[in-house]
Length: 304
Ligand SMILES: [Zn+2]
Image (cartoon, rainbow, N blue to C red; front, side, top):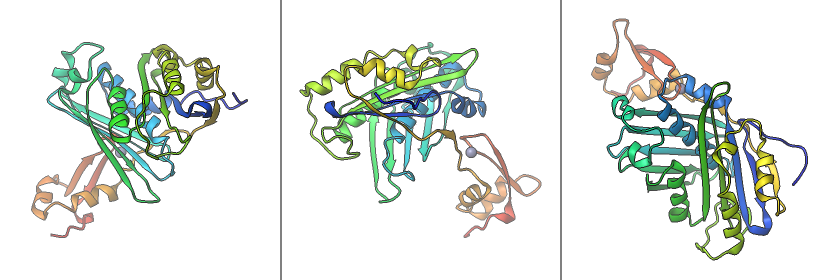
């Protein structure tokens, strides 16, 4: 393992184990998570779900080859207490929110399955490549114990990339919300991004890496005192692991007066007038960051 870079919070560790055709990502989010959560007041179960989804978003977003690319996770309810969960990542900027029925959510236990949270819901994972304009989207059922299980199925079914994903989140008295995750993938062609390959479960080098990765504990992922390099080294010390620091993650919301004015311009004039308050302004709040935008009617250039 190579020398000095050390990653702790809000910066993924990118690693490859060439001999096993394995690529991986480790990430632990702290300050960025608390910035995102501060815009809302989520109960513990909702906070944990969103924290794990944000970690997954960074893990997957950091595999995008082009910097302007975007990764979007969207989970839709199938009648469960959580109605909607949306996260996206673009060039290190991360945001996310969820909508839920507070009464129904209060009735479920502290460690719910995906079915308890979403009912028979679905997870859409979308990769948008900026340079080529290509879009890959896969939709998988929200089944299993965590949103990471659903993402594993996505890679297995849509991408034919054997993958292991571990996610963990907890609330720390001092650090606030802390969450971490590990993504390990088998790419027989090495670090080749999005190339296709046949699913094969009989690769001993992958089985070995997968078995080792599965031993990583939730407490290790969320332990602020252990660097990500230390975690990678503990797991894969038998192998030659190449590591590099990924892009630092910050809370980034792309909401603006112009953005909402553009959305409102799609509505008929009459409906816009009905939405406006006594001062002739439509007040919009951003679902991601809770910022409030009072937009004067005369600043919206409608087509109708
Ligand atoms: Zn916003």
